[in-house]
Length: 103
Image (cartoon, rainbow, N blue to C red; front, top):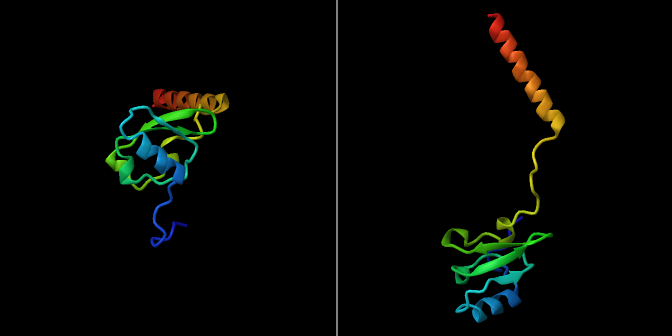
């Protein structure tokens, strides 16, 4: 469910203060507020957004306006499928080769 239009976008008050304070400074702003919406005032500002394990550097561009900060710092990392799946795939490929050779 989205937020009501009459309420406006949610942005942490402390985050707004930091953006105004660090506008001239090029040092990234460290934040844990993944739920904050990116507003046009943030364009060109660098953020370090926490994903639960580490901080991920994000520099805000015009295309990001309207999205949430959390969308740009993924919390899960895909390590690939299990070895059993890879083995099954290899067996399927070998079966295809055998059937093609018989023809």
